[in-house]
Each structure stands twice: as C-alpha cells, then as structure tokens.
Length: 155
Image (cartoon, rainbow, N blue to C red; front, top):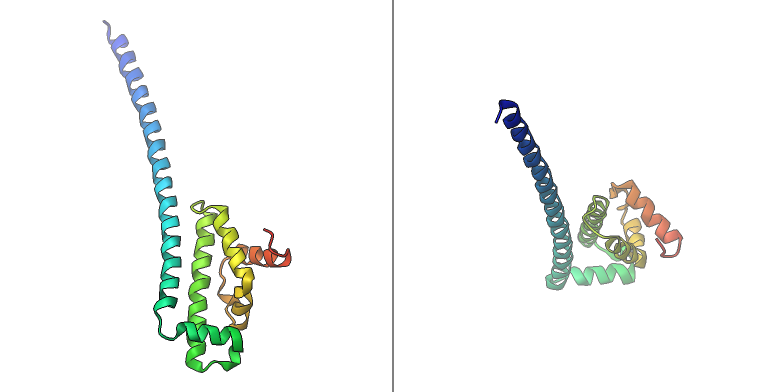
C-alpha cells in the first residue's frame, strides 16, 4: 500500500468521524432543548402552585383581595393597598415571564391563551386601577393583551 492510499483512508475516516460528531451534537442540542422546555413548564406549574399556596395559607391576604374586589381600591388601608399591589405585581411578573418563555419556544401557545383568558377575567382592570400597567416590560405581550381584550377574547 502506498502512502497516498493510506492518506486517503485516513482522510475518509476523519470525514466519517466528523459527520458522526455533527449528528451527535445535533442530538445533544435537541435533548438540551427538550430539557429546557420541560424545565420551563415545571417552573410555570411551580409558580402557579406557589401563588395559590400563598393565598391559601396567608391569614389575611384572601380577605384583603376580596375587600379590594368587592369594595374597591378606596376601601383599602395603605398597608392593604401595598399588599394588593405586591400580590398583583407578583402575578404580572409571573405571567410576563411565561410569555417570554413562550417567545423563546419553551412554552406552548395554549399557555399564553390561558394567561390571556385569565387576564381578561378582570385582572387587567385591576392592574389598571393599581397603576401596574407601566410594569409591563414586554411591549409585544402588552399589545397581545390589548388585542385580546378588544377582540372579545380571541387571540
């Protein structure tokens, strides 16, 4: 066997190894994306559970929220108003984070639609009363919310 033939075999072998390496890299990226999507969904579930747990275990938060919903913002003391604003800011930030995860491809459209439905059930109006709309940093999300509300609940 001549040196040129050996060189051809080595080059062919190196090319095959490179191709296999590219396929393995693609598989690893796919797995990493799948894990990231699962993590995003798990984080969403955890956030929702934390919010409900806080509401269920707080001695007075539920009463303050019911007071705000039934009697309005003027019925709240400064401390109650602070707590209601903090509560709604927590919800706003969580929903905004979910929209960002959707934009990045880690959450499905159904999650966004559910969030928009929740917002249309009065949350947006409460955010408006509490002066929290300026806290929405993702303008695309804000436009989508406003479109959803104007269209009567159709995204």
